[in-house]
Image 1 (tube, rainbow, N blue to C red):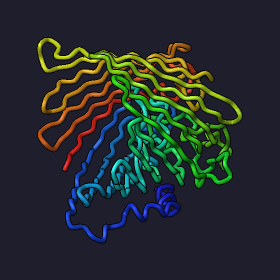
Image 2: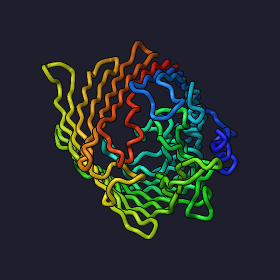
Image 3: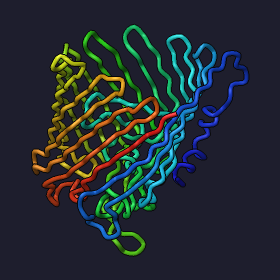
Image 4: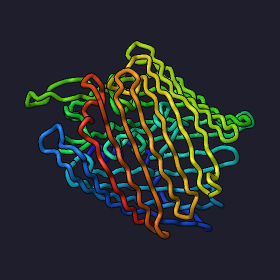
Length: 403
């Protein structure tokens, strides 16, 4: 929580995002949100003393939206908070969004806290670099912290061009030693180091081009600034105990994400080349997805997913997925309750380490949404960056009440 308020103080751009329009003859104000209790149970005893097998928490998020000028201008403020029973680091508050936006013809302008997503693949989003990962929320990398930014985008006949100025960097969140899943060696965020002397105040920027060409959706991007994914280096804390110290390096990255839709087939690719620490590095992921529509003459759809992830450095603590295959099944009922199930398996082709994932969700009535998640880690050798999760198999139940 302290890091968050520090970032707000250091980013005066947010004042504009929270401003109220002086004249608004046609203001449309909306409020929505949810409260979501969560229960986790870990099937095995922990590797670290003091970690519990049962954990409960509750999260809440509220979205305030104001539109005016025929919806060409709007303000969105979206605070998020979680209280966790065992993990003090997971009890945190964040502004996912706090932005002012305006559309003028084929131009769009945004300023404040915002979330931006890049990518097309299912298992790993390699090119998604604008926002920092909220790692205490979920280890799958899907949850993101709000990012202070100025964004300008313009739509032309040849595609959409978007520029980003990112004036403040936000550190990744990590579980405490009492939280699970977590590393066996704790991450000491008080010793965080930066390659840049400007540290979190380094001015990052990105430029992206995107377009749809027939069946093809294409994105090209350039990013220069602080890598959101830290290098975790071994060290000692004040008591002489071993810890991992986050080190955030500067990177220059050229990336692309491509998706082709050919009937029931989806072809996907993400990849980038980056220059950091005086070394070049190439990472890529890609695969296919095929959907059987209306199986057994019902409204149900069944999708088959297969993807491959490659890192030319091999497995490392910045990216444990260096030679891995993901396969999955996605079942969608297409009913009024939005019932869906995704089951997937990740196999490390170098070590044969296995990761199993199950995600199921369904809406009950107009206001309740229930999700069940299961994650299992099997046959992970000590040399694997994910070895700390060997005993952190868990089942998770969330029941959200929307309003």
